[in-house]
Amino acid sequence: MCTDGQLWSTLLFMLLVAAAIPSAVFQHRFLVQLESQHPKVWSTLGKRTVLTEDGNTSYASAQWYLLTGEFATLPDSALVAQGMKARAFFLVTAVALVAWGVAAVLANASPRLACISRVLHAIGSNS
Image (cartoon, rainbow, N blue to C red):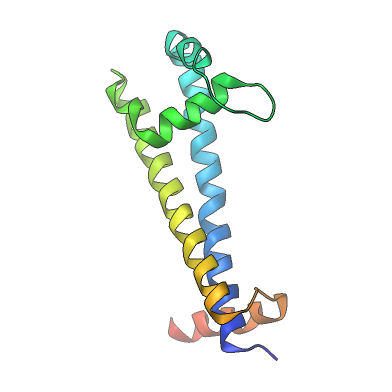
């Protein structure tokens, strides 16, 4: 049996996963391009003071560089466009995370695998 709270929690969790995967891919592509095409910027980012779990300050600083929008000053329009897409997907992922968290707390329900078929059926019947 799948309660309405579990249904919403499952639906929003699926949305979170669906947003997080392309977000990670776009962020990774942006960071790889930044490192290869703008090594001076990359090395400057590595000199910033940031907290990291693995000591890779360049990567952590570059993620912050992306999320704060500092990359928009780069003279590389293709990389800036790629950064805008990565940043937008990150923001969608953050909103999905908050929405799922709030819904799970308010409904006191966590996602359930058993609810996935009900979610997919509901989506299919609306099409």
